[in-house]
Length: 125
Image (tube, rainbow, N blue to C red; front, side, top):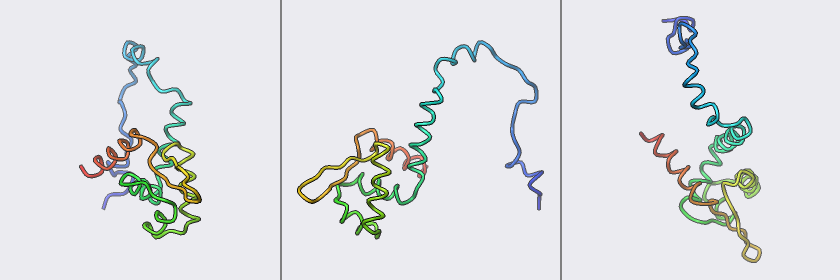
């Protein structure tokens, strides 16, 4: 058995010599995400990094649901469902509409639907 010290998968893979390519750096320097946008994107992926929220997204990718039905479908309490929906709503991943005393949730837009679909395609490859 190999120790972690010699395990190729745990080793850093890096250039053997330091060699900066100024032309390449100059070409992309103004295209790299700003720290602010990278932070927002990381927060979005962090929000999606929860299995319960992914299951909610899966349900909402199929249909609009009221909180009661969504909780029942996913075998969650209404409180837990509402909490997760609030997190998704704060990241602009879901939206809601009120109909009397009922609150119905759906995915925010086609971009969110596509993000979800591509994520599924990626893991199914």
